[in-house]
Length: 223
Image 1 (cartoon, rainbow, N blue to C red):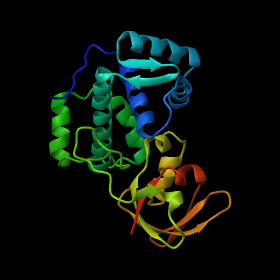
Image 2 (cartoon, one colour; image 1 turned 180 degrees about the vertical axis):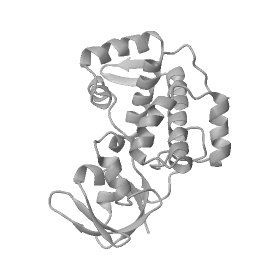
Image 3 (cartoon, one colour; image 1 turned 90 degrees about the vertical axis):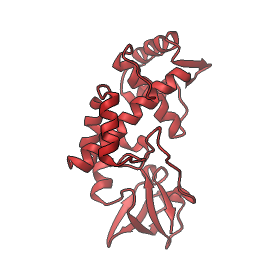
Image 4 (spheres, one colour; image 1 turned 60 degrees about the horizontal axis):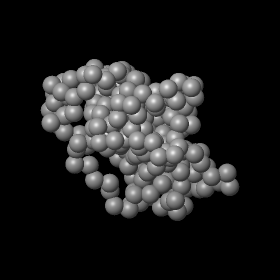
C-alpha cells in the first residue's frame, strides 16, 4: 500500500525528496549540498533539518544526513509521484523535459493514491521517468554494463540509459540534452574526447559535445 502522509507539509516532502535524490546520485548528503540543490539559505536549511529530525524523518550522524524508515517511505512516495507525473506530462501531454520537470515539482504534493494508480494504468506501468531515473516501487533493474559516458572508449557505440537528477538542476541542460537527442533509449557513438573532458558523440548523424560535468554523470551501456 502506498505511504500516505497528509500530516506533512510540502516542505517536509521536498526535503525528504532532496535527501533521497542526493543519496541516489551518490552525493554526500550534508547541509551544504541541500543548500545548493534547493537554492535556499543555510539558516533555512538548518532550521528545516532540525524540524525533520524532531519529526523522526531523518537521522544525523555528525554532518551526514540520512532518512529514517518513515522518511524514506515519504520520500519514495513523493519521488514516485514526481516521476509518474513527468511521464504523464511528456508522454501524454507532450511537454518538454524541462517543462515537465518544473510542473511535476508541483504535482508531486497533490497527487492522490487513486490518481497515482490511474497514472500507472494509463502509462502501462512505467519503470522510469523520461530521464531514465527509476520510479520507486517498480521492478526497475539497472542494465548490465552501465557506466558513465566519460568512460566509453572512443569509437565505441552506446545507448543512453539515464540522466541523473543532479543534471536536471543544471540551467539549460535538460533542454540541451533533449534537443541533442541524448535521451534514454537513444544510440550514439563516442567520436572524440578533449583534454578538458568534453566528450564528443555522434547522435544520429549529429556531432554533440558533452561537457565533463555532464559526461561524468550521464549513464550509458556500451553496444
